[in-house]
Length: 360
Image 1: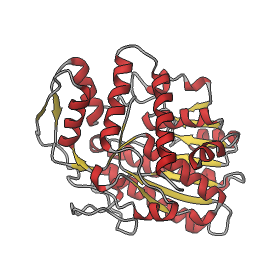
Image 2 (image 1 turned 135 degrees about the vertical axis):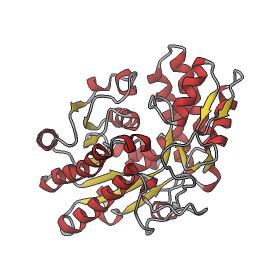
Image 3 (image 1 turned 90 degrees about the vertical axis):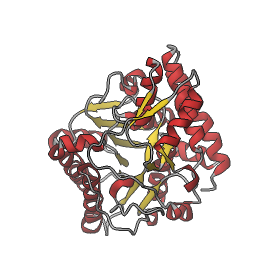
Image 4 (image 1 turned 60 degrees about the vertical axis):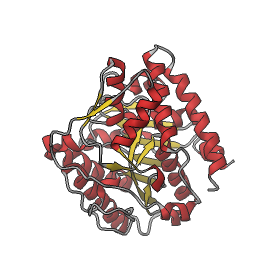
């Protein structure tokens, strides 16, 4: 099966992952460690307390370097020690509302952080595959009803979205300027909103819903009518690994890819919370408390035709399955059971579904 071949590909591969202590980073670190990769992570300390990275004790299973992506000397030292073959860049300031509070910091991390990691790749003689993970919010948002394509203009509105647009442009410039005649594949992946167990961030709807459910309070929803491309966290992570593998083997696959759900799974925040309440049970309810606030896109969805055509890829779990898996993880955590074991089960289930679903 391709998926097992994909994970087997990473056995013994030297992988450098930025942002490894975050929510997505912890899931990806676990997948790579369990696949037998020689993994080095570079990131700040976990951004939340509690944190999934700490729960999984991943620092004992990989080379975990705590450092700032803006610190060129520390980053370069860790990179040179790792001698990576594959680099996945996920370190970021990822919260839209935070970017209004700390815009300069957001640009420093998201733009200069990209410059810094690409400088490491430029100076390396071992890297063969580089993937920069950005966001669906890089596009100039016209609030239209169809999905954005990779050829649409980049121009995020808020400082977070705009800084990730800049990160895309930086990657494009480096690709043209320094890697056109080198055997290094450079790609970006523009993913949507991810949900899943182990996300303890604030201002994210599923973590906020889980906290409310555990406290037996109604869920407060700021904007129930906004539409987002929600996916379970495993969906984009497996796709990142697929892109990094494919372009490692054949540099012609290096490109810019949207990674999102099908139209049927692009739901409003209100619909998402309804699914959550149904999955959680216990009489959970929510209430609309829109009180204004900084601008965020109201309608946003991706056209993923390109990655489907290129790799024969398609999304694996529908939104109801993604919500159910998030609730399942949260209840295991609430009840003091093994989060590592439930993640093993969910990764195994997703792998089986991927194998049946994809012909990549």
